Image 1 (cartoon, rainbow, N blue to C red):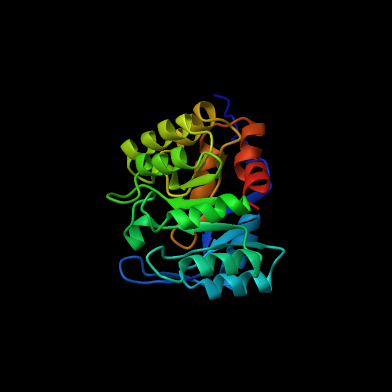
Image 2 (cartoon, one colour; image 1 turned 90 degrees about the vertical axis):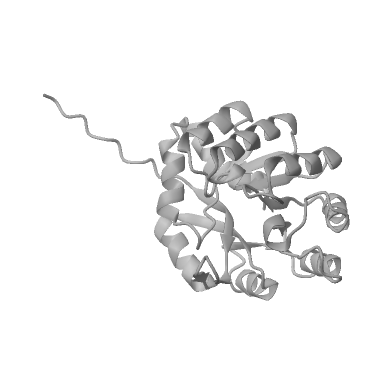
Length: 248
């Protein structure tokens, strides 16, 4: 019997659309400094990462230290009176290139009135808004779709594309099909086959790779993209080209 050797993965350029610095305690129990993140990126062959932190000073320090490797997104709590001033300062003074929102952590719906001034600013500055998805009651794909409908000219990155729940993953794909301004990000998605489905049904230009480091490992997250069965061209767009064009 002739054995067929498995082909080694083709080396690809990679941009990580979703990474963190800082300490995340409670149930998560993970932490990462910018130096640790860089070591993991180097080991995995990742050229650049979009970084967020609930402590925005840490994200700023990371970008200041290695502007060649990190792109900063500001992470406000829309309930805070200083949320919009923070976002404006981060974008206009620190050079941050986008906004990250976490409806679950900060307990808001994407269309709540506190969120609107932040999204209005994103529209004015023509920068993307990345939004956590996949957990009820605040961060479900349908709610992000409502925001996409309100702001069709704002690019929304649906982080995790529904996360680990099959129903929410399917909802993320279906919602993105209805709204051209939604991009799906792959970190934490539980079904590698859904990455391929997203590329085929939503469009190869609207899916981006993310790790969610330190919550997830590069080997696992890159492995899911590798296992998805994409063409070489699709794989290049998901791992690199789309993020370079849309998020940086």
